[in-house]
Length: 187
Length: 417
Image (cartoon, rainbow over all chains, first blue to last red; front, side, top):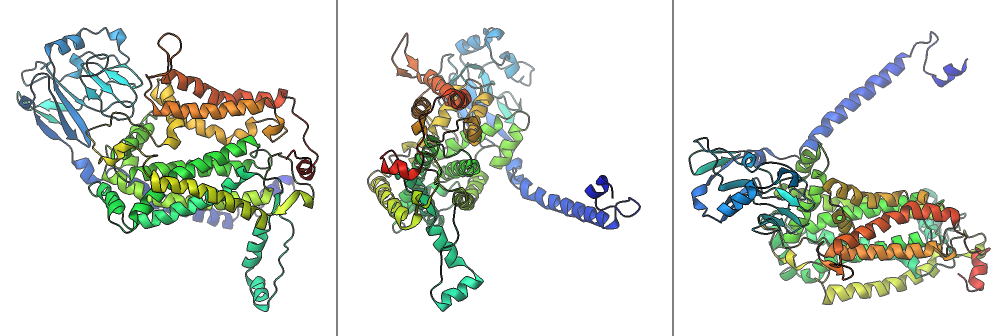
């Protein structure tokens, strides 16, 4: 017997793999497919359940917010901030140099048009969750008059954009649209 | 290490049993395990840790009989345990304080191993199993801290599960899969409870491997040389059972001091407020035993890099046996590296201090504006990693070590052990 034959002992006298080898491989394959199809549900059950996914959208009445106030609404377990910004805050948000922003985005790009196609620059709607590790920033605080996250010291400006600190991105604008002049639907 | 069995069954019943299931022989040989005769009290922490693990499992099983893992009921059920359940006022703090005591003991045990070079050949795997135990302990501690559903529980869970969200591409899906929703909620609490009950038994299994490994390679000792003759060793029982028992007695006094007089000293007042997803506490701080890693996380301005560095701080422990190139095990004979090690421990304490304070506050008022905690934690983080690479490998090559004694017995008799 040559050396290669010894390494591969399951060859028959014609040098072909034996039928027993075939049965071994076929059995192992069926077992592997079976194990994988049982494992998948065991892993996937940990994802969000259907009722969690279905708790989808909410409507918010903007007329309830006065100038300089902020409304906090729970949406998918996270707070949505609705802020009626003062003229000074809007001005501050508009006059920022894009080069100063770690995550450049204009203030207008963070707003959604109302039914007339214009922007209600006074209403800022965003997910009030710090993009660092998910804490809730405090309003009218920080070095940029916007929000300040007490957890690890991220500063956001009056448009909810990250300006200073460890957070990598601007606070997220949820998907929303104006149903009328004062009512929006989030989600 | 373990020599031939010395067990001789005396009675017919013992002989009958020994022939069929030599369980008594196993126990007798286990207790007669030859241990180096120069072990000091730092070697008692293995026994202390066994006690901690048993205490946590027993009190934990009892608490699970009274606890309800539901976002609306969890907080109140823990308060009910403390106020209304018979002896709940004792058992709940035993479990909560016990976690702190467990970590205190494991840190001493790890530093002991690092000082006496207990991770070196042939104990690399023993060390790695130990690191795995530490890792599972941290997971268990974190999961358990979520269960009382106070403000720190909730926000700690939010921050830590946020680490996974930092992973590029799959991060967000992974985070939702872990939480069972868009944010920390009822599904999260229920799975955390389930896993918190499971992991201690994983620790038991790993401890069994750890003890098996130490019985196979033998214990290291303060002078780090192998026992050569019978005179170099003592049977584990009664010599070290008695020494361990005394150390356990002292340890339990400290434990009892906290349980009876300072049950909340190691916790955080904010955790007596029920979890509120709309309000972040003014400052989120983890339990004290995670503070050094929290400081490393915050030392870096980049989110992903901070998470990577924090996990690297633990991962690097696993390869320690191959980073330390020295032939001599014990730091007693390494006059320079010894000081690097002492500074390493100091860096650990400094990181813990930084983790507990706000990053922009002034730690040391020197220079213009003072040294902030952020910069102090950067310096300490740098040293933490520098100790492993390059200090340990380089010192192993260049350091001139002191002469090592010929045998443990000689060292003991001359008073050097």
